Image (cartoon, protein in one colour):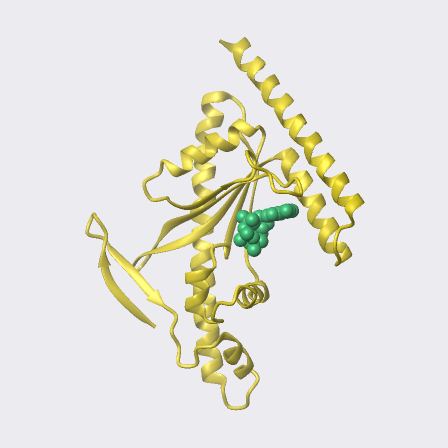
Length: 245
Ligand code: GTP
Ligand code: MG
């Protein structure tokens, strides 16, 4: 493990810590866990892996807290809650390995950090579509949040009907030895988009095979219906707002 001393604009120490270990390949390292007499190697690898996952978990907590703060402020000002739920998830070691192999990246811990952007995931479920964009603006306006990638599947839904706003952001976590930048995937959806996505996910994974054309068409129709619902709800919200003025 090594560090590179870097300073940010305020002179704070930035920690650049790589997970280079003697045996580089994750698979090799995982296999070595079961080799006789390799306890030390196995322990060192697991320590590195667990440390990296802890960093991602901390970054997820930082982002969740940012949304909780925005929620508090918004609720106080507007007397309603823009967030109906926040879910966080850390990608499993198995999914991490599968994704690296699928995308042709080296299966090492350094490669995880360099090539994968969805190890830490935060999903924010909103009441209205307007809330999605409000929360996006409020998050990106914070000076310790850097946007890396933005995919707006609400304005441009996916072929199957999937809608959500996806951001890949980078944010610091502050450790005893300095700060460390971590990537987090943030997904924003309305309640209607979320129910559609979980239904589609269940259909896709429960069956373990391709979705038939009939089912895919039905899903797309449901996505249209749920989009219509969101638009009508947004109009009702506007009427409510107008009546308050
Ligand atoms: P992944 O390899 O799945 O991470 O895709 P990607 O790197 O092309 O990113 P994308 O932004 O398209 O999707 C990232 C995540 O959004 C997925 O892991 C899912 O959680 C969610 N997602 C994307 N497309 C769909 C979809 O069609 N249905 C559902 N239910 N979820 C989706
Ligand atoms: Mg993903």
